Image (tube, rainbow, N blue to C red):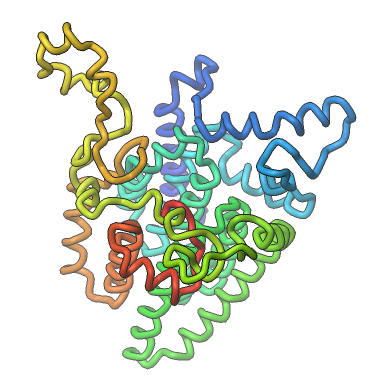
Amino acid sequence: MNTLKKCLPDAIVVALFAVISFAYFLVPVSQGKILFRHDSQAGVGMGQELTEYEQRTGEVTRWTNSLFSGMPTYQISPSYNSTDGLSAVMAAYHLWLPDYVWFLFAYLLGFYILLRAFNFRQSLAALGSILWAFSSYFLIIIAAGHLWKVMALAYLPPMIGGVVLAYRGKYLWGFIVTAVFTAFEVKANHVQMTYYYLFIVLFMVVAYLVQAIREKRLQHFLKASGVLVAAALIGVAINISNLYHTWEYQKESMRGKSELTKANSANQTSSGLDRDYITQWSYGIDETLTLLVPNAKGGASVPLSQNATAMAKANPEVESMLPQLYEAVPQYFGTQPGTSGPVYVGAFVLFLFVLGLFIVKTPLKWALLAATILSILLSWGHNFMGFTNFFLDNVPCMPSSAL
């Protein structure tokens, strides 16, 4: 009875998250509408040959000729019998909610688990989760169809929550939460996103080490670290089939080392993608202001005519004489090739972040500050090429076109 009473507030919050997620997507869910997602639609086209082959033969092919010069299908949509059980557990974690709805639900619940691991009371943890989940970027990538990235971002906070639990002395819960969400995270199949988030974990581990040395609790630190290593290995081992085949294939892809290299080319890395490709979607230095002011760079890459505020101030004479002008001028004027919208956090959240730097006394705040600064510097890409080159040349990295 006491256990039930203790868990009841958390259960209420989980139910609230499900209601919020349904409410946000109420119209498309209730009317049977499907959200147009560019990358998802492209994926349907990529898989058309596979679908036709299966319909014709009843067999699943592991190769397609419709992409590049041909490639394995397990890189398009990984599916292995060894992870069927894990997929069932993930569906249960999402409460078997429909698409779109469970994306938002997973954002909310994942960050809630992290804040509860930090011992936030339920009401504050719920509020923090809502602030997190409704950051603009998380909703933008749903609309863009970056679903593996959605899942990776949803499972990272609870995975870090497991780390927090272990270093707070709750070894069993730390082990369970870390193992489960490491398995979820790797199953999300966005290795690059996971890799860069591991820098946060690294900085946190260093902070906990400093704290353990100060408090002369090094034995506790080593025990917690051992628990987390074991949990991480289990999470990775469950997904070893996909990881192995991805590692094997990348050596033969454009992300592997090329036999054709340009002598003394400053654009080429020692292996993998060229620097221009890696930094193609670099965030402008001044564009970082969108964390505070969403339209500091105009918003999304859509025609100015779609902006009601701008068109209310448009010159009627110009509009009547050159109606196509406002269709040709994009709202976005940043340095990226294009964007579906700004990365907006909010003035209130940034205020709390700065306030926390003064209130929080543990070394953990410096770890989170360092991770924040690193992520911003890396996001600048070719706009801060000295740092980017140092990182590419000296740090084992997972390069992409959106470093």
